[in-house]
Image 1 (cartoon, rainbow, N blue to C red):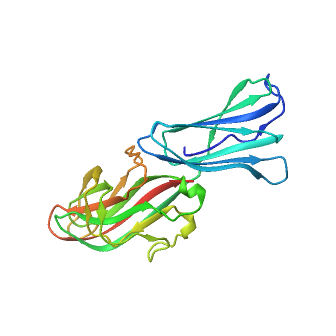
Image 2: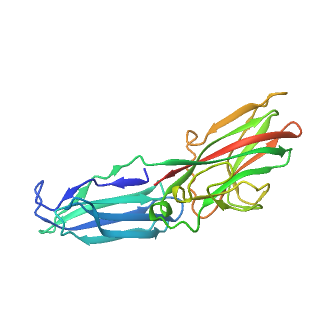
Image 3: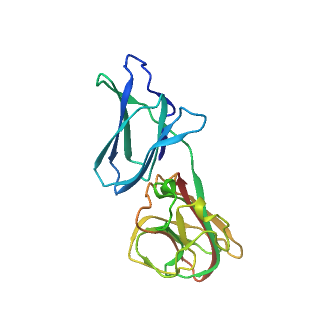
Length: 264
């Protein structure tokens, strides 16, 4: 629910209110970390929408941001993209008599799943950093900057029992690159992410979930994990998130795909 809209509102007197003179937007960050918000106000008077308000700003943990806009349009709407699921947005209309009226916000189901694939990885009992994602520090599309980004799931093909971990933060070898990659043709402006598919180690960080998977001797068996179903609500802000794999029964050659949900 990171993309919200008021749909079309009117300045004309309705529901016991006089003509609307102002709109007040209040943003409260109840999440675990700093959030990024992209707010637009659209003038719907003409045949095509035009912007009368636009802002890209950060909201610290437990901070409240209040914004006031003068309304001169007959028809208008606000849209909000936020990077934290626990960020709360309230919009109030203020009429000429000073009466405040709350506006209902409608969530929009806009999302994509950004993924990466890697094969021919040799794993042993040591932890192997297979695929890592981070926010793209150079992304310029405001909606992408404020996108909510969370681990979605992964699949691992293995012929031995394995252990997997999702590690947040830490320092990786290899390098992060923009899409498209050699295995995943995603245009750079379609995602707010960079990927590291040449890493092998991650130092430090913290485990946010882990588990085990069975292998099949002489053949591959798929270990599929839905992280959204586990209610893993970790949100990518300023640190990477990495799929780490190790074998529980000797050396193995594996393949893996890691998926991240983006809502913008």
